[in-house]
Figure 1 (tube, rainbow, N blue to C red):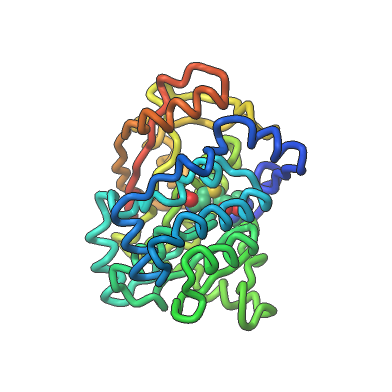
Figure 2 (figure 1 turned 90 degrees about the vertical axis):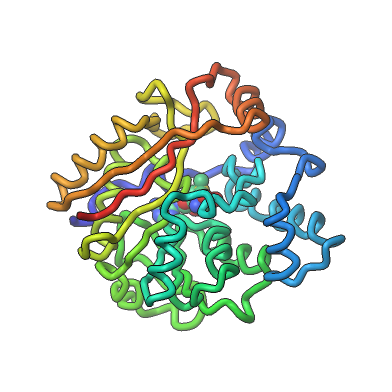
Length: 306
Ligand SMILES: C[S@@+](CC[C@H](N)C(=O)[O-])C[C@H]1O[C@@H](n2cnc3c(N)ncnc32)[C@H](O)[C@@H]1O
């Protein structure tokens, strides 16, 4: 599909005033609420080589820098420390595909924490790719995981609505063909908390772009989780000045991919399930957005090309 979509909702800006306003909401969890899972602690110790007593301060200072790049709720609320891919129903399949040479692209990767979980699990890191609009997030991801010296993955910065815009973050940055070589060859795209940042129409266009990046082989897949709703529909986000987003449930998500299929001449098997958002996260969302969000849940998905 031609890259025609607007970049309106993907290039939202947040000035210093807005960052500070959002900091006062509960989107920005106080430093002392940082609670690391045992898995995350092990990863920071054994993969990143950070002494246990330094992990807390290290994460806090990188989060601060990332918040100043763009105040995404997933940064403010420490969601980048959930290694959600470990809970994906496709996790074992993903690991097996990557061990046998498959390629994985984390689209809208920010800290690319799931990519690090895969590297920590021992898949060849050269089979892992990440891409984000904001190159600083990718530099900060190297800082967070302290792995620039050893990670053999390739990161690009660019806009999903224009596949020719992607450039390598380090090394040869001039050659647009490097991302072009990936287009049509990726076996797994992770779209974690990615499509839900766009207004409804741009969400659709971004999904069509991903269908183009993905390999046309049966079994290639788009996995992830994003904010959904048991009462699907358009939802304006009080914290941003962009177009209303569409919060999906299992049925609307299936219909969404039928529409992507019609647009891109592709077919998809769509598995999804709703997962409760942890009560403490829900509480902070409710207070930050000042509205009832009882219907809000994670929509976990595995969308497989058939
Ligand atoms: C809500 S964050 C999710 C980050 C990460 N996937 C996670 O689950 O923690 C959305 C990410 O998408 C990136 N992004 C937004 N618009 C984009 C675009 N048009 N093209 C590529 N990346 C984009 C943002 O910079 C940000 O890092």
